[in-house]
Image (cartoon, rainbow, N blue to C red; front, side, top):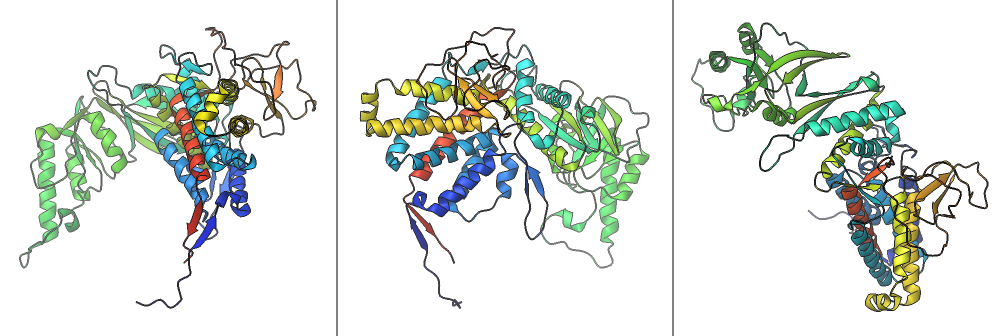
Length: 564
């Protein structure tokens, strides 16, 4: 078919980072994401002009998909960050803000793109090798003999989402529940390869957060279930095929129907024959992923079988894992004995207007249910996302039982470490990187200022951010303190909560020049524990993603867009 309008040529933009419009959009995105960062971040409401759901959030995994842009640079950064978040759940905003800061500082410094990329790669290598060292000053080992570190890690993830609107007791309660749910999904007595279980989250709107709870086993909606005289253990059958009796459920192919035959009656007879087999095999719980025919339901209930329908695909796997049942996918074969599962007991629990059937496992099970309560839908939705992220972060600690100091202390510590290490063997370094001393110095300044900018982004109330010149931890002052100089006798603790201020400390504002120094290690007293922690695995990957994505953007020479 011929085109009615002549096709327009593609638009080619030379050196896109020299384009003022593109740089303004990147700066706007940085300001947008920076304002969401941390526990006091500002919420964003995203709404499409043509209607639809209003999204209220500060979480990168919710906010970024809701933002649409025709600018390829923004879509490149979005895709990169969302890919990181899909794999590691945490540190999405850290990666995005750092990436955009690196691009902005590199373009402002006047560095050649190639020189900036090489310096960034070199400094990234310095950071990653330092973070993986045993004597790293901003990393701690997690002790699984105590739940304190695990709760602190979970609480740091959950408290960083202001849309959850949690009080201190509520945040501690939900964090403790998240750790308990995580521990319930780790099998205790499984030889060989360990398969982690699953936490099923059930949301209850309109109830206090402190009513939230975690239960071993599975809780499912069952408003009409009546339990009468059930002995334990109970045999379970699980159907993934529909038991509604529709012809469409019989599968693909041609169906031959004899004249005068009543297909509905024949299918119902087949369903009742299936019901007789279930009763004959002494099944006490029949669960169907889809719909169960009312006549079959009546027959089964009349013979003391508890019937649950419309379970949904999401609950099929955890239910099969809990009971040991194998889902039956067809009605045309005899149910093998190995397809049946067991539960120890059934009980009914009430949560507000929800009536839930509690399936108790026969032995040790790695399936549990978290009941999350909150005052309204928006807070509840954000809390569910935060708890799922926190549990994923806890799972990452099983491979690497370490955490990084939170509250901006890792960023300032790394910045000070990079500045100090970059002053060593400068001639060899610039020769290997193929740049001048000036370019190397500008690249180091841009990299360190970017790290410090991420720490400073945690402050949203007009206060000041600075670091001590001994351990290079991050500190803040409220907006009403005296400007023009750093208060020598500060009070309080650093961002991670590991350090208390002392009269002899020296300070410097972030993003200002200071003499390079090697951050001194802290004495690790058992009584002093950090209050804010970040996932080591997630943050290390986020650091790599941020630098690599920034380098990719800096390396783009032409931007070609098809505008048809």
